Image 1 (cartoon, rainbow, N blue to C red):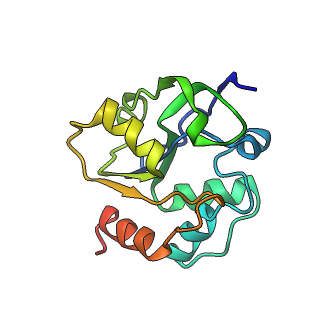
Image 2 (cartoon, helix red, strand yellow):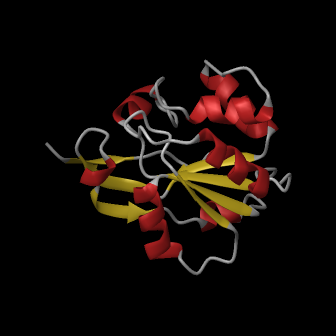
Length: 161
């Protein structure tokens, strides 16, 4: 059954330079009250591996990893009807007002985590004047994820390519 649920506030600070946008928090993320809460989601492993850090396990470790490397996190959908964690069921949604991040953080690039997030982003922010990198979803449901694509986009976004 589909019901209206709310996502999270953006995670960012005055040093965040790269914004990573997902679609909407999964059931496990909502239960854990933070982004990418499903332990099978590859997001934290990819980010930790890219920066040569240990895989964060606690909420504090995850937030430190993001803060220490200038990463802002949010979802392009802030409120919607959704069945379970399936992006394909997202409907009746409200789109994130990215100015909330841009007024606080000097964002220089945006990474989009997954096709549904990208399609909603382009529909609403297609004319944005920043580099935007569309990447395969880190969700465990995506069996075609390629970490090398993520690493290449992260190098470009952080200017280390």
